Each structure stands twice: as C-alpha cells, then as structure tokens.
Image 1 (cartoon, one colour):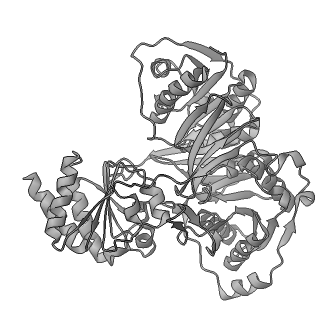
Image 2 (image 1 turned 180 degrees about the vertical axis):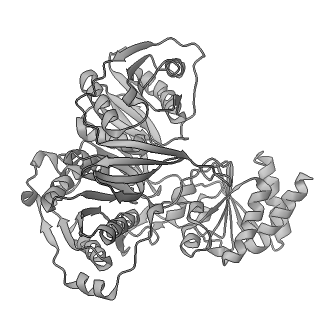
Image 3 (image 1 turned 120 degrees about the vertical axis):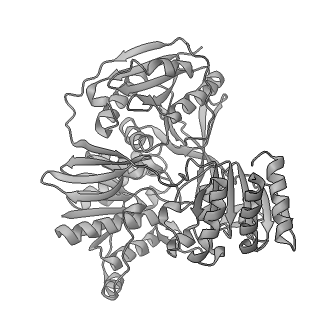
Length: 261
Length: 331
C-alpha cells in the first residue's frame, strides 16, 4: 500500500506562555513539534504499512526548519519525506495551502491513501485535508478512527458527535484522523539513526508546477484584519484563608449569591 | 432592501434541524438587518415537509430546498455538488455553516470548489457596513489569540460557526417564507463512498460537552489515587468529570475526560478547576465557560487569570470540604 501523510510543524503548545505585559504569546525559544493530531495520522499510516506492506511518505509545507518534523517522522518509521518550501508560499491560507499541497502530493507519488491529522493546533481550521482531497479528485472522510483495506478501497470508522459511522470508499481516498485512533509509537534506535542521515527531498514552487496566482498571499481568499488577545477577567475574586472550612464557606456563599447553585 | 443574500446551511439529521442551524439563523437575522441582505436557508434532505416551517420561524425568508433520496444524510460528494452548483448559480454574499462534524467537513470542500474564503470555527460574526464585509472572529492558537478574518475579493464569504455560541431567537410559530425548489441531478456524480452503518452511543456518565457543571482535576491532585476526591465532588454537584492533559498522559484517567486543545472544548455554567495550573492547552478548552472557579495552592498559577473566583489553598483540604458542605446544604 502506498501511503502519504501530510503533516505540519507547530509550536509546542504546552511550552507557550503568555506575556503578561503585552498579552501576546511568547513564541521565542519555544520548540517546534509535529502537530499532535498529525501523530495519529502518521501512526495510522504506519499501522496500514505494518498490515498490508508498502511505504509511508510524509509531506509537509512550511519553512526550511520544518525539515526536523519530517526527520522525526522518519525516526518512527516513515520511509520517504518531502519538504515543500518556498518564500512564494508565505501567507497562504487554507485554500492556497490545499492547492499547493495537492500538487506536491500528486508529484510525490500515486498514493492509495492520503492521511491528515484532524486539524493543526495552531490554526485549528481542519480545512486542508478536505481541500487537498478535492484538488486531487479523491473522496475524503473526516474524523476517522479506524481504517482497513477492502477489495475496492477502504472501510473506515468515522467519529461523530453522537457515536460513529462506518463508511466504504472506493479507490484512492483521503482521511483525516482523530486522536482516539491511536498513540504514535516511539522512535527506535535504528529509526533515529536513519532520521539523521535520510535525504529529504525539497521542492519549491517551480518544482511542483503551481499557477503563481493561486499560491501564497495572492492565492488566498481570506486575510487577517486584526489579531488581539481575548479579554482577561479583571473582576476576579480571590479567597485565601488559613482554614479551608472558611474558604469553602465563602466560595459557596459567592456561588449562591450568583444563583449558580 | 438589496437582492443580495446571506445563506445558512440547514443541517438536518434524520429529519430534525440541528441546534447549530437555528443558532445560525438567529445570528443571521442580525447580520441581515445590518447588511440589508436577505436571510435564506439551503436545505438538503430526502423530504422537506416538516423542516421548512422551522426555518421560516427562525428568520429565513427564503429556503432553497434540494430534495433527493441521495440527500437524506450528509455524503460529502453529493452535498458538495448540490451546494456548489447552487452557490455558482445564485451567488450569495455570505454562506454560514455550523462548525459540526458535518459543517467542518463539507464547507472546506465547497470553499475550494467555488474559490471562496472560509474561516473555521468562528465565535463572533459582525458586518462592516462601510466596506460591506463580513467580520469573522475566531480563536486561534487554542483560544489565546483572537483573529478577525476578512474575505475581501472572493465570494461568497463563508464561515463555519461554533455551536452553543449564539442564542436561538424564534420569531414566531407561523412565519411566512418562500420555498425555492432546487432541481437535483446527481446522476453524473459517481458514488465513491457509502455509509453502511451508523451507531449512536449511549453516554454512561454525564457528557462533558452537555454538562452544566464540570469538576476537573490536574497534576496538582498528586496521583490517580486522588481522582475519587474529584469524582465525589462531581457526583454531589451532578457534574461531569474533566481532566487536564497532564493527568491523561500520565494515565491517571481515561482520555475522554480530557478538556483542552487536544481534548474536548466545554462551556458549562460552572467549571471548577482543581489543581490545574492553566497551560494554554487546557485554557483553550474551558475558558468560554460561563463561570470559572479555580482551586490551586500557587497564587501565581495562570488558571487564576481566567477564573471568576480563585481559591488559594490546598485542594486536598478544600475539595473534600466543599463536597461535604454541599452535601450538608442539600439536607
């Protein structure tokens, strides 16, 4: 089975803090990681490979340093890696990203399945998976928890608000994968060695044959007008006593006052 | 009134309109007033008889109704074909979808099909009457930054909008509206995917997303042996039990309790955070709760920045005390 996994490198949200003065995120010195939801897509890809044989190819669009995220994928068992990077891609929204990535995936190989994490934790849009699938003209199933091969294609379990659905898909398909699907395996020593020396193929705009007006800021229908911090609660009340009984009494009093209990 | 239109995707499951749809129409009424545009709904179903009146009652003046056996439930290829054709033909200014498992899958496909801008998971919508543009505000980076997004040059301007954010406003029980019957021809769309089974799961405990009260435990509880203290308080309040990522990753409690960026987003009436420091990852999932109580021994903990009431103290003393005082209160 020829498997592609599209990933994104994101800042590690556990290590991001807020600057109390400016109410902005402190991103300097914050390590970048593989988007946590993409780990589940990678693991699903590796499990499919374990079961049916074949190859896992990881692809990311991002700045040059996103190469590290690809090497981390190789360390856990991915076979090939492609870095799609070009200054011209800067400012891409989900439309332009979907377009660009779809061309890269198609150039990288003829895949039976293209996997994505449910969403990326920095933008939280969940839009690129379905977008890429449309540009590739393949069916997409979102929020997939399990996938298996069938004669015609795949059978997958899709998580919904109330439970789950089982879908059959014919031919090539794209899936976005939920966290409940699995936990990504740890890198092996051999994997780590391979990750260090593996060749990462790097492609720019010219290599994948984009139409210039559809990439980067120019190709993006949406623009950000402003970014601001959500208002911090300023009317907070603090309860602090030696005696926990007293604290609880005050707390309950305040909750009752507001008719919350 | 201009002849420009605002569309709301009317999501129905088994012939029932989703709450998200009614919320969107209610917000759509406000946008329609500001913009002078006409509020419309687009409905895909296998039978619209019992659905139209509900849409009129929440403010839709016009309903584009596509009826076909193949449209009984969400199937991405069929739904995106019908909707993209409708958009191309009628050129609405704005199209809104609920940020549900259906809306967040369908809208991105339509956006690339019709080259529209799409803003995900908005929590605030407004209309700029000078530029005549939809202002779409959404949390990014797990809710720590808000961004207002515009779509200046492409139409329609599309958003998925988070459920439970807007209030439902019903105009009356017998509003009048116009139905536009949509001609559906799916004969050329190849059937590439089939739904073969659907299961609605019984939730055994109180569901986090629906709960009015949530009591959550973080690393400060010290170990899995102390989760029963949290559970006891939750039981006394009829609350759901939440947990921080740290406790789930440590294996102290099952993942479906996890609140936060990689867990669930919740908005209960009261959220009680016990021994949770307040990592961004956690705040992202709970800071839109109506009322937040934080119990933590570190007065500098970031959780206090989002709390309405902060209790500085040892949760191992306070939580059991709170449980017993509530129990006493009920007597």
